[in-house]
Image (tube, rainbow, N blue to C red; front, side, top):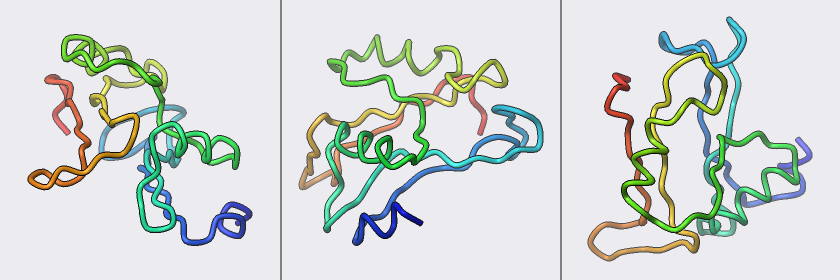
Length: 121
């Protein structure tokens, strides 16, 4: 409620996780929310700015690797890495975003997800 009052015109995008669709992250029968993106004042915030806005307001976020140079082989390693929400399930993959928001006329917003090849979700 405080976040909404202090951040008008802001939308937080996220996902539910826990005991969802046959995947188990965390204690049994609990469902939780984690943010992965923030849209404020008509635009998506840069990666670090959105992450910090969530943290400073107590909004839980998906596990964040941080600002790292793009390297496809390293991203593949992250996508199959141990799940950062504990040893409850395999990692779905990794979302790759630009440090500074980018828009491509052909593709739209520059953001991608590299899915773990073992994930069947």
